[in-house]
Length: 534
Ligand code: CA
Ligand code: CA
Image (cartoon, rainbow, N blue to C red; front, side, top):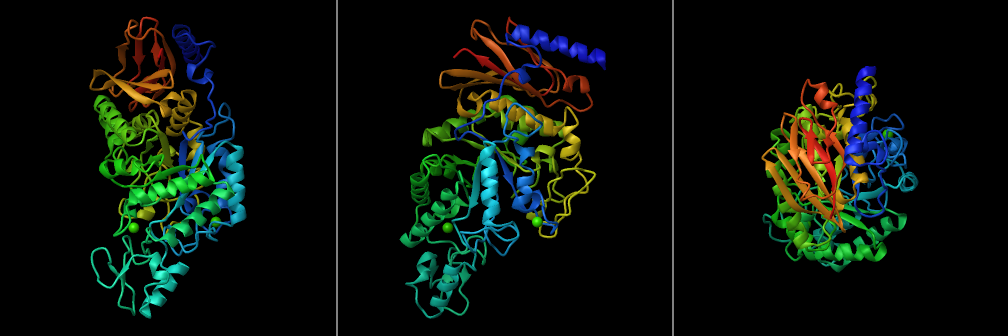
């Protein structure tokens, strides 16, 4: 063991000398991570009911999240064994009859299952002390059917009055594909794109906009940093142009907080996402690259990184054509789809995570993804939202709509993975740190794809006069690549991440090296960040 350590040290020192960094040790560790002060963040999506239960009622809650904040970020990007995320997206938390809470009864409170407004204020304060931005899930396409306005609308419609509260919703005397839900005991139908319990708001009505201005102001005044907007694809209705509505909402919110950050959910591959970027919104989730069949997972599995990089550049260029300030919102999975562990093995998973984390834009890591939580089955939503596994030897008593987590996490719980140097969790920590050490990655544009061959690629990323190259070796063999010193006059290795291959500890614990003549050696399935002269 001592000999291996000594050899590793020699390698590390050599790397530093050759790569020209100032201090000894792993160059990844010697470069300081800089806390973000802008909208470019590594977000973490928390499904509140599943994360941590503080009071033993078998449901996660806001005090539970507060008790785990040091795991997410201890406030110092250069110390501790925290994950390092600097943004949180809280899944819905407002009073609602369902466990998922996407049918909101009251937009101005916290569901009692999760805590109180005081608990929320404390969470917000603790997040801000750690440099974490907190955004909340805002469901403004539809309300719950028990929302006061909808209850009143139905009462009035039963009396034939469509000029009162019914104006807040989309109603018609004719049933159709759009007006697909009956107001029982009346002559009317309403639009409920998702279900009977979720009547769609009429977003053209001035009263509805006034109402959502109050809602936005209420949460922004409390200090929330922005919103994850649910179901923006469904903002379009008979009279509403969804893009126009989104522009109104975004600009209105900027009036209350000029730095407000918003990311919209439009589950589409490209077309309508580009349209919604025209609204000026910061981000829309990149569904083309997400899910178990999207381009991150596919690249992680196949290692065909050149196709991946070309496609990423094309997407990034496109969204910035529609909004020059667009921030791509990358993710692997979220609460609406099977877990990545249901489709990839450990090493494919790790490589997919590297492709995802080292792409321009923000990242949204779904809780538990950093330890490889598996969905107990792939047929129902609740199983994609099961309890966080903090310790494989002490599983939580949390039931999500009756569904418990798998009996143990195949790669270990948080406790076990923090103790394993090459665990998935430690890879996530390393990748998030690389993003903080190299701010160009998130903020820049891919200006060139350097094709070595189909499994070896470099993405040149330019930002504000600075330039880095992210290099991926997607092959299951180590690689030696040549970066021409004539083309790249100054090259400094800033860090790397090894996803690795099964059963080869030597490969998986090896370092990336860059010599003065531009020879880059990379372990099998690994990624490197190199600083270049701009
Ligand atoms: Ca609880
Ligand atoms: Ca709608």
